[in-house]
Image 1 (tube, helix red, strand yellow):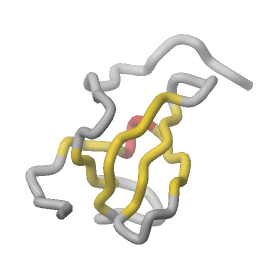
Image 2 (cartoon, one colour):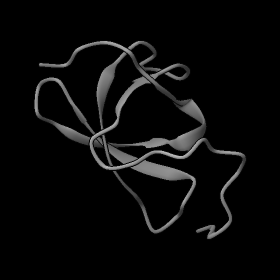
Image 3 (spheres, helix red, strand yellow):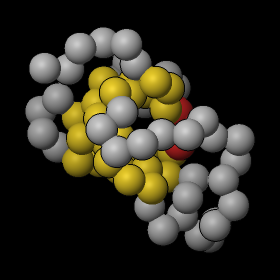
Amino acid sequence: MISNRPVNNPEFRLGDKVVLAEGTYQGTPGVFLRLREDVNWADIQELNGRIRAHPMRWLQHSLLCLA
């Protein structure tokens, strides 16, 4: 089911450094790209260049340098 109502998500902007704080890939760093059609999911670009969708509730802002 697609939702257009966000579930208590912090605001992320294109290019924000993020980390997966929960879930199967916990600890994975990446860069926030965009929300999906279901606004409780987002695309992030991981360090290996791969773009994957993850639940917004798993994301946290990261202070890591992703250069």
